[in-house]
Amino acid sequence: MDTLPFIDLKSQREAIREDLEPRLKKVLGSAAFIQGPEVRELEEELARFVGVSECVSCANGTDALVLPLMAWGVGPGDAVFVPAFTFIATAEVASLRGASPVFVDVDPATFNIDAADLDRKIAAVEAGGKLKPRLAVTVDLFGLPADYPAVKAVCDRRGMAVLEDAAQGFGGSRDGARAGNFGLAAATSFFPAKPLGCYGDGGAVFTSDAELAAVLRSLRGHGAGADRYEHVRIGVNSRLDTLQAAVLLSKLKAFPGELAARDRAASRYSELIGDLCETPKVPLGCLSSWAQYVVKLPAGADRDAVIARMRDKGVPTMVYYPRPLHLQPAYLPLGGRAGDCPVSERLCGEVLALPMHPYLDEATQERVVRTLRESLA
Image 1 (tube, rainbow, N blue to C red):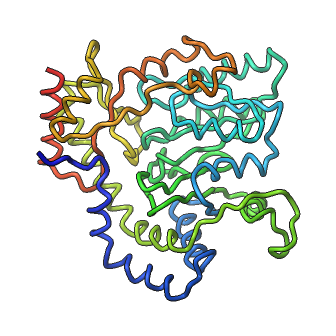
Image 2: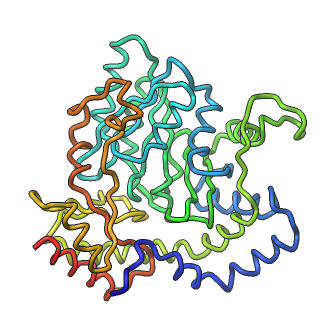
Image 3: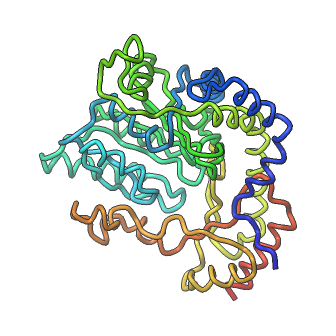
């Protein structure tokens, strides 16, 4: 029995081949492999797509998160509030700067950071008197933009910044504003599996603060000043290569159509399994980019057995995420305990991601759902 792709990058490649190959040949012919003209063209197109004035590309999504922290001088003694239910990179960047991540629980329906728990965790840090609450890093998890009105209200009261982690939500929107448009800055990743991904690693920071963008451009290039051999600050080496920019330019042309196809696929899934599992919730006024389609399995289901049965029938699944960040071994020295983020802890035992990409046809989705039903029986 053939195994379905979890994310079908091969079909996507064939769909964009006619536009992509001339772009790649142009870069190969020019030999401008670093900071070629396609990089600036891509930055302009991405900024226009998101609706901000500045886009600063970089080497990967983790750098896209850490560069704003560097620009803002986040470091030891600062508390950076992050959701407990997400990938480690969101918290890791605070640790890399010597700051202290503080883990916040998530909303049980949307899986995004819970503004009420954020408020409680900030108050607790303030009462402790050891750390300064500095900023919140939100995550547009699985494609859905976080509840920014609620999060910003909490942060604005305390003079805290919001950094949007839009790596999964790029292409999604809330109240007409696209992901990447929220917070003082936003970061995205172009890892191949992301809604807009390249053929390697890449990332970008979005902002409408021109001064911040200038500092970010300096930081990504070893802290360069007027020229590449004047260094006005300590920076890093984090540049998006030109071949990846060419790939992303082709993918960006196809992206609106892919977003619509993802939304149709998500709707089909929800219709087919709404009686079987708890399906994703998209609040009024929001659009998800459906980076993943994640369900909650019924109470009492043996998830490991379901995964094994589906795998045996050629249907791959994934668990995002099997362990909350505050209980990761690397963060146990911070004193996190079971019960600190109960919703996140519960979700880690319930969720299951099904194959999701813009090239899912109805027959394939019916096979996925049929296999899920059989595996739960």
